Image 1: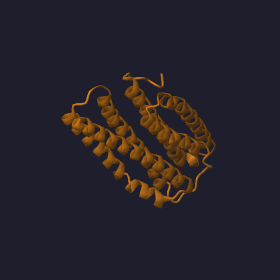
Image 2: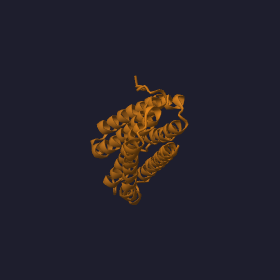
Image 3: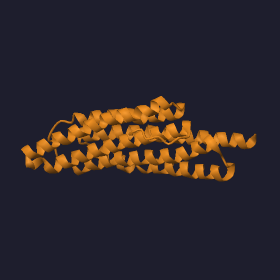
Amino acid sequence: MIRRKELDDGLEQLKGMLIEMGTRVEKVLGDAMRALENLDTLAARRIIADDIKLNQIEENVDLLGARMIATQQPVAKDLRRILVAFKMASDLERMGDLAVDIAKVVVRLDGQTLVKPLVDLPQMAEISQQMIRESIQSYVQENVNLACKMAKDDDQVDALFSQVVRDLYGLMMDNPRTITQAGLISFVGRYIERIADHATNIGESVVYLVTGKRPDLNA
């Protein structure tokens, strides 16, 4: 009975850390996009400096999970909960890195003005933020239907990214002087697209947690 309580307490701690990581990633993506829209290099530099916090939480997830496996010897779904926590923490940490990469683009654009208004990129970011939030919600609720929704949302982000690339290519063709900035803006689109991919990974992890089977939501 004591061992079961220790295991349950550990699983709750893991869940709490993953929720915190999801909240931080959603916020940092929003902050990075605001920094880009305003070309606010001071805000961008703060985002870059704060990146270590997510790394620390991921390390804590890994340490706690490893200790639980060694001391509690979990099986079946309890073991899956820990394995999924490892994978989710890795995906969330990578999403944080990608948001920081957006902030680094802002720093590189210091002193410039945007060659065109940002339209599709903010929409991509909004959908991705929703995906982050709902992927964590699907994990907490063990909601397979919500987890599977990630693939449909990811398709929206992919379509918007394709539009961004087309628009920027046309801009570069019309005005070669925009090539450097347009290239950086296209990187931002790629970073957001990858964040959505990682949110889809979390959806797949949730399906595995609940069913014990490894799905491919993009299949």
